[in-house]
Structures are given as C-alpha cells and as structure tokens.
Image (cartoon, rainbow, N blue to C red; front, side):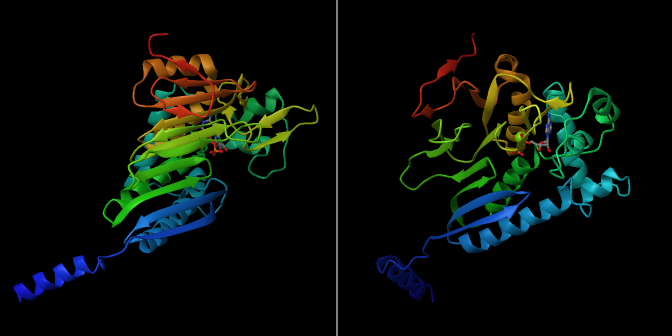
Length: 311
Ligand code: ADP
Ligand code: MG
C-alpha cells in the first residue's frame, strides 16, 4: 500500500497535477461602500464565500444606522453585548484614550445632526451641537472596516490561501506574499482626483488605511465643504490643512482608528503623535498637494518630505 502511495505521489509530481492554485475575486457592496476582494490559493473560492459571509455578519451587527443591528439595539439600551462584542467596544474605548479623544467611537448623534446618516444635510449651530455632543451613542464607522480586515486575516490563516488583497472602501488589507517575491504596491488616491499621489510598498499582512475629506461630504449654502470626519472637540468637521491621511500598520482596527484620529489632529499634532508612538507609519497629504511621509514608509512615484523621529 505504502509503495503504491509513493508511486502515486511521484506520478502526481511528475505529471504536474498537484493541486492547482486558483484565483477568486469579487466586488461587493457592504458597510455602505464598495469592497473589492481578491484571493489566491487552493481554497480561494471557499475562502471568498467565507469572507463575504463574515463581512455581512459584521455589517448586520455593527451598522449604526440599520435599526435592526446589534449596535442600534445597544444604543437604544435594549441589549447587552456578548464577550466578543464587549471586547470590540473596549478596544474602541482604548483607542479613543490612546489618541487623546481624537478618535471618538460615540459620535453617532453628531453624525445624525449633520445629516451624514440620512444624507439630508444640515449645518447645525453651536447650541444644536452642544445639545447632542455628549449623549454617547456608539458609531464604529471609523474602525469597523479595519476590524473586518483583521478578522478576514484570521479567517484566511487556517485555509489553503497563499495570498490575498482587498480594498474595503479605502481600507486596503494585504495577506501573504506574492510568488515573485515583490512587495504589494498600494496606490494612495489623489484627494483632488486624477492620478494617484504615489505608491506605498508593503510586505505580508498589512493594513493601509486612508481617511480623507473627499470621501463623504456636502457643500453648504455658504459654499463650504463639510466632510464626515468630525473633530470631537468642536463637533464640526475637522478643519485643518490636510486632505488625507494614510496609515500603515499590521493591526487593521488600529490603522483605521488612527487614520481618522490623525486626520482630526492635523499635520503638526499628527506627526508629533507618530514620534511619540511606535508601531505604525503615515502619509499625510495636504490640501495644497504636499506629501509628508514618516521615515518607515516605502513611498514611490511622488515627491515628498520625510518626517523623521528626531525632528
Ligand atoms: P471612511 O469610513 O470613509 O473610511 P473613516 O475611517 O475616517 O473614513 O471613518 C469616518 C466615519 O467614522 C464617519 O463616517 C463617522 O461614522 C465616524 N467618525 C467621524 N468622525 C469621527 C471621529 N473623530 N472619531 C471616530 N469616528 C468618527
Ligand atoms: Mg478610520
């Protein structure tokens, strides 16, 4: 029997009919955004199916605006979180403390006041803002796609997947290495449209997450652009020199929360925060088109200024 098995395996190798790698890819709409998923490996089709199911489950649980979600019920005080849900809520609170409150997972009432949920936009006055500012209803919109990417990586690990790359609405997540040994190259979108600002290279599993003022916004009667990243201190859209922030980090949820928080902080405070905290890299793009990259970023195809730890 053993002999037959050896001959069979030898034939399999010689005839080249070892299990073949396949590619599975799909573009879906989930979490209110377009998601593009590409997976390579023997189990690529199965993996893709499981990834889609996971994304749909996370959306059904954590959507702040779907009245049937767990998060909506939590905000109404009707349910208690299970251990896994509590762990994510705790992590969101922890990231809020870590960023000195620039990332605030409880801004739902403010988002609704500005009309970002209903798309019936309104520029509120200070009294309106003050009234809802501290009412503390959860909105994990700035974290959930990064968390989803992290969960997808965990899901892929035990499967026969050699590599994957996905763009979950501005959250790029890579997994594994390319067979030719080259790095993954991720384009940083130009906030003003047109060609990408540049390309960052990453290896293995990495989250490359961008937050920008061009992704979701409206133009007020005053002609001003009001975008969807709020400064928790003022209750209004963060108003500084930046138009986008890209964070590179092994941890997806942290990358997502940080891209939002650093956008709120602005270039000066954001780069000071990076100098004080290890474990991630950043590319800042200003409204006037200047690019600043922290020293650990492998950025190409653009001119930029390097931010170093010593500055
Ligand atoms: P996107 O969701 O477009 O990728 P972000 O990750 O920056 O961008 O998340 C923005 C979303 O997070 C908003 O739509 C809102 O739901 C929520 N949000 C807005 N401002 C903040 C903030 N300062 N901290 C945490 N969440 C925020
Ligand atoms: Mg974010």
